[in-house]
Length: 225
Image (cartoon, rainbow, N blue to C red; front, side):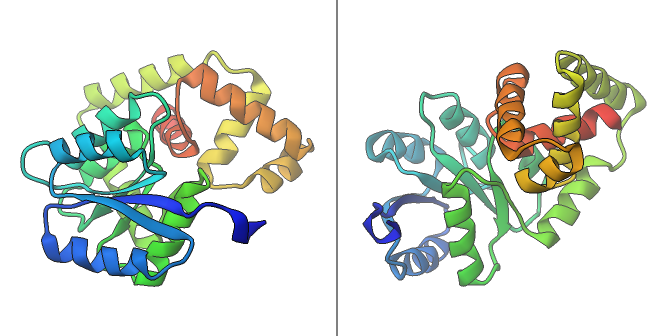
């Protein structure tokens, strides 16, 4: 069945021509991936993605004009949006966090080995989040770094209000997702079936108005401080 599947359609968005060329070579070398377009900035990306309707967008965080965060927000507000995988050098962790909250499925460092970038594209195409170990550490540090007491309390109150709509079982599922557990592990912990875990997760998406598990994890972290 895998050989009959259509290749994953990819768009690369980066203002650096050399980065685009390197990523193009990586994508073009994989039979199950196909590069359908490139864009040097956010405005061009919005246009070409609307025309090409890719499955996955490799999105640079930092670009002149419309940056990757704003572009991601715009894309994910549209019907049937692509899955977004952010590319970063981590000179601005706050933009990465913002992109994840907006619905990006994950991010990788630009110096990630090509094989891992390819794996990340495939993982995101399946609707699963990608957080590399180094990237995860930086995001956690940014999320838990210095912040005014008023700002932290405001974020916590807003997150707790959203989570208050959940049943106890849904909340347990959300907390397990925040720990990075997969469906089988959650099922084992909660002594329920994988099908029930999937049902709870679907309820989480609807009740919390989120697009993916990364957003759920960030919401739980905000609520629990």
